[in-house]
Image 1 (cartoon, rainbow, N blue to C red):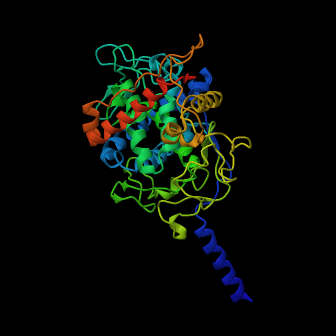
Image 2 (cartoon, rainbow, N blue to C red):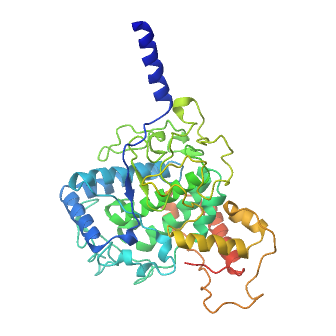
Length: 440
């Protein structure tokens, strides 16, 4: 009897191991930074001041700088920054157990980023002043950091007193829907909104130690949100393809870490699925955690290109409307059916965007750029072919290019960067030449 019981316990333990990390018993919700009150921002400011006094802010800046070449320009970009921002959040919660990193949806004000309320004096602060570009406003006003030397935290908008237009939500929507591999999605995000925000803010954000500016954390929380939306859109929670930080990507790869901000040997797979293991958070505009851990992980012999909970094709966007056959779960009981076909966090605008695209573009173009919306019949409706309503939105501005210095700093292939930019411009040109009216 004892022998039988022992075998049973061993078998159960093996099954538990094969199922991957345990589901979190509770999850915190990362909120849109635009929804924070002045009191919320003040609470964040209090934590950042304490962390800086203890040297934590500069340790994060230094660690990111030392790991820079290993965590950019390859598929590890997403898992590293997911773990990195989570570590920052965990340390911040030692000072305030209610602390959660918000996300900054930079597409909400892509036409005029400098006017974004998130960059107000109550929030992240605006442009730097004087000759040294010292940030004199916001939650890190006049903060002195120590890496790579003692200096005031800097901010320097890329167009003097303003910031050039960023990437429109519709471009990011196209990436979420049409990119069928993580390596492709990573390239498109890293070469677009990732670089545009860093370069737009400038100063600290235009360096390898950008993590000293809290803008870095809220920006990368947003990129993490977009990755999570992409994972849900394609039901590909464990897809990890292409090149990692040390060669061919593998879920068993160790996430690069620095001794000043250790991850204790965390693997890529340990951060792939929100709501499992130690990744106990989700986003207020996204689907919650899957109700069961996806198949295809390293613990159960799957390959790195899997993670499809329903056994379907990972290279389709059939689930792009947020319905992953019941496997999204939820974090607060009401968000598991939220659409993930859009780069915007604004749920109402998502609906208008989707409807506008479906009513303005022909099926071939939709299938190419927005396959998550499904095919439709009818020719492309071109702007000027019919009277425009008086409230017709302004044309979508073309996205900015990455600077040669930024491309060199990251070791990107200039031709691939240019190809990605050309594709983004083609999306904008197609929408502007149709009767589509952007709700953003």
